[in-house]
Structure formats: structure tokens, C-alpha cells
Image (cartoon, rainbow, N blue to C red; front, side, top):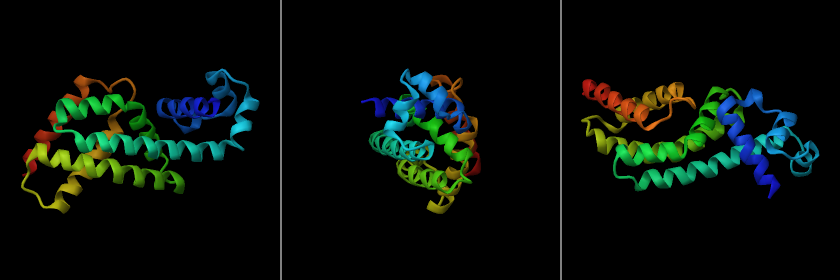
Length: 175
């Protein structure tokens, strides 16, 4: 049970503050368990990070299933994003550190899961006369922009609705 507690707190810490804040002593204080407990479950911080990446991919699969079943961007996708905001903020941190091969690999895997389901919903909502390659290109830029803009303070229903509305206007102007 305490292993999951370590992973959950570490995941949240990275999502909100970044990998540079991921240190064992402060994490132990957040978890409320002694530092020795960390070493009981994880050989070192590198092993812990590997398990955080595995947790992220599990969370990405859950989110992808929800996105696949969504019928609309607003309100369904907006609600899914808000429900998974910690996952998206964690993913944002991974993107910032893509120069590390394990992080880049996790970004690619997660985005192939989430991106495919999201692209399908986005195409249905926008109804743009683009080829599949053009749509993927525009979608890629939209994803990049999304992850550059999100942070814990702005992920709200209003911000997301405004973001998707603006994105719809921009993509319609391209058509």
C-alpha cells in the first residue's frame, strides 16, 4: 500500500512542480513516511522514475478509452481533461524533458494512445476538408500549443472551452 502512496505523491509532485523537485527527502515529508520506506520499495530515484513512467502510461490508457467513447469536445472532452489534469500536467513535464530517452519514449507511447482517440474526436467536431496528413500536422501543432499553455492554475472549464473555441476558429480559417 505505501508503494502506491509514494508513486501517487511523486506523480503529483512532478505534475505540479517538475522533475527537478523530485527528491527523496522532500517527497518523504509529503508522503508522511520515513525516507527508509522509499528505499524499501525502490532501489533509487531512477527506479522510482521508471515506475512513475509506467504509471503514466497506465493513466494514458485509461484516458484514451474515455476519449474514444466521448461524443463531443464540449462538455465531454473538457470533463475528461479536468478529471485527468494531473496526468496531463505530468505529461507536460515529460515533454519538457524529452531529451532524456526514457521520457521521450513515454511521451511517444502516451501520445499515440491519447492522440489517436483525441484526433478522431477533433476531426469529427471540426469537420475540416483536410487530408489525414494535414489533419495530423495541424493536430500536432495544436497539441504542442496546448502543452505549452497548460499549468495548474489555468486548467478550468472556462479556459478549456475558450481554448477549444479559439482552436476551432484558427483551424476553420486554414480551410
